[in-house]
Length: 273
Image (cartoon, rainbow, N blue to C red; front, side, top):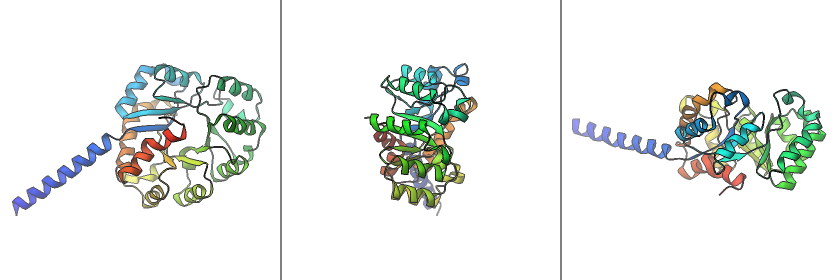
């Protein structure tokens, strides 16, 4: 009996070790990174790259306030950093950007660099979706083949998708509070919509992948990606822990689905090989 028990323990240990190795060797494309001005004096670009290495982040989609933060990381590691142009020159722009025509010239000029794969992450309410600035952003995105990264709710994302049907749109935080049923409906209806899951602890409460989200990932494995969103400086130090928790629930999915969500989907979205 003791031998059987020891044998079972050995089998379980090997199985758990295999799971751990499988999770650790899964590369991550973090689809929601900011390197904002308050971060610069605390974490140098070299330090950020070391944090990425510790967290197993092989690639990162980066936008920053101001954009100089994104460029600092991109210049440090152009093969690893995918720049996204945030329309906020300062934090004050967050509240007024949709009605500020000077934002248009700012964005248009910076897009001429030819390095940006999207515009965002920007915060948007439903009634702002058809403003002159947003309409121009959509035109630029369609013309240049880049995406819009929108932080909005159910009504806001649906209005964007209806107004600009030819534009690829990435929904930040899965809409913050939208459940899998709502996301299921949106993804099923709008082929240009992708969803990133930064700061969505409800995906795997207590480390266990929620059944509703699991079913959704299995049904639409090519429409999701992960992110961490270090929106304040203190969150950077938690990056390895954040991605450790993400890997834990990714490892509860079939390997091919986990790989799509971990890195393949965002790579395809931004045309990265």
